Image (tube, rainbow, N blue to C red):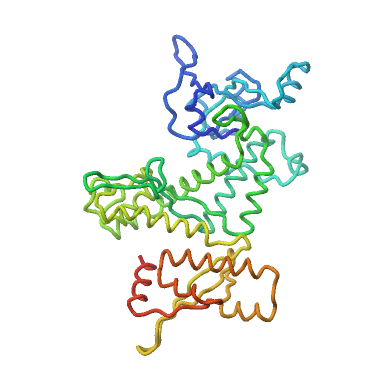
Length: 417
């Protein structure tokens, strides 16, 4: 089971063709039109028989509608030692340790793969694998992608995702919209690894990867592609798909109740809809385009870019992040205040920075410099969203900041919206 990015399938180096079937002429290969989605390839090494492939898929994955999915041929990477063991042991090769062979396979879009991967049992070692019934012994590549799918579920269940966007192939930093021209940004949900457990699981999955999970070359057709790039692609795509599907199933009715129209009507209503509602619709609908109509709205990409940069950089691998706790005054004479809090991922454990600095003085630690650096970076990132936080950067041991009424009002408006 190999993940095939659409860019590889559409590149001539892949020699990708789709087999068409005609009752009069039988099966024949035909150059495919541009593939617009990433997909998994189900295949059997060195086998050219489509019948054998169909029978194997039907046995292992009975939920897959064999007759309704495309059959294709595409170049895949095989280790030289495997080729020698299966064919000619005296095979002469160059210095490379792999060969490229045309392979027949079935195309499973990523959007449909959750039905397959969700039913794969978790196998922790070879002993557990050997105890399974024969028909349940999946290949290592299938287990690899099932582990990746379960990591996506874990990330989503913990709420570790954020909206991300691009203008075509450009980052938001290069995005511009003129008064004469509408702009389009594409929005997607992205996962983020936050806790130490997330990083450990991610590294374990990478270490487990068999070549069959990523048996394609890079763009230059010179080297095996990096599995980390394919795993990141999968985590991004599956996170976006699952969140959209669950949102459509649960939130559509609530959306209509709040705004008075369906998310599907957003494009039709156009600029009459506030930008924040159009943004929300682009994160709910299958169509992730968001139209930008006016000059003030061109700030949206920059706003989201700063937001996502903050999210990506505000967590620590040690398993903590910086949070804000707003204190409401008891009377008009008192000022509003925000306390800075260290919060543990995956638990309710938290400690104020006031208490943290006090403990650090009593029990110094070797990583104090790194901790101070992380705190200052996190405070700076927060200040990009809420500028009054910059006041805390003047202190050696920042603990809290006081707010004016207007600043408190701005903070409440931002957090509530």
